Length: 333
Image (cartoon, rainbow, N blue to C red):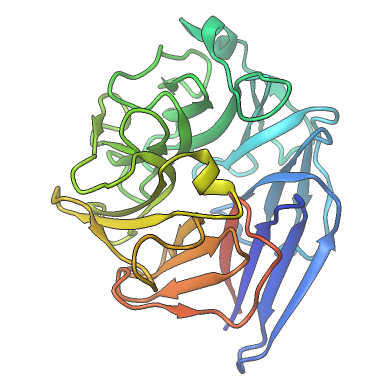
C-alpha cells in the first residue's frame, strides 16, 4: 500500500508526495503555477480529484493527481468544491463572488443554482481577506446520509443550509460562526457538522445536520479558528486549530494552538511541541478508514501524523514550501 499526499501550496501550486511502500518518498508538482485554491476527492472513485482555481475554473484528475484536464467553469474563481457521496459525477462548486454551481456529469457541464442568489441577508456579505473585497463560498459540506442536504460557509457572511439539493437555501443558521473558515460533515454520521471560524468563538458544531448550532469555546485560549476535523469512528471526538488572529495564523511569525475535544468535554491541547505552536496547522485531515489517525499540514511546509488521536506525533519525511488550506491523503494499492 502506497500513501500519497496531494495539496495546495502558498504559491497555489498542486503538489504530490508519494511513498513507494519501502520508506522512500518522491515529491512532484504536476501542475506548477495553476493558481489552485482548493481540492476535493471523489468518495465514490478515489482516483478522481478536482481542483478549483483562481480564475481558470475547475480541473480534474483521473489518476490520483498525476495528470490534470480542464473540467469547466472557465473564467470563474472557484474557492470550494464538494463531490457527492451519493450521486456519481455530481460536484458542487462555490465561487467568488458568492455563487453556487452544480455539475451532474463530472464537470462536463455546469448549472448555476439561482436559489443561492436569493438567500435572505446576503446583500451585506463582505470579505476583507483579499482584493477585490467580495464574499465567497469558502466551504461546501455535503451530508453523508441525505443527498438533498448540504451546507455552505461564506467568508465573511453566513452558514446557510439547503434541504432540496441546493435549489433553495435558508438564511444564516443561528449559532454558527459568520466568519467561516472551515465547515465539514462527519464522514458517516450525517447529524454531526463541525466548523472553525473567526469572530464569535473559534469553533462551533451541530448535532442535527446543521439546523441548529452551538459554539464550543470552553478551553480555547484564542478564538480565531482556522481548520477543524472529526474522527471517523467517534463523531464526538474532533479537532480545531486556532490563533489570536489572521496575522498570527497565516503570517511568518505564527502563534498556533491545536486542540481535541471529546464527548462534550472542554478542549485540551495536543501537538508535537508545547503551545503555542510556531506554525499554524492550516490543514487538518482524518483518515476515513482509520479511526485515531490525524494529519496536520503546516504553514511552514511540514506534515505531521498522529495515530492515537493526537497524543503522539511524528513528522513525515518530506517538506513543501508551505501547505495551503487543502490536503488530501490517499492510500493507493
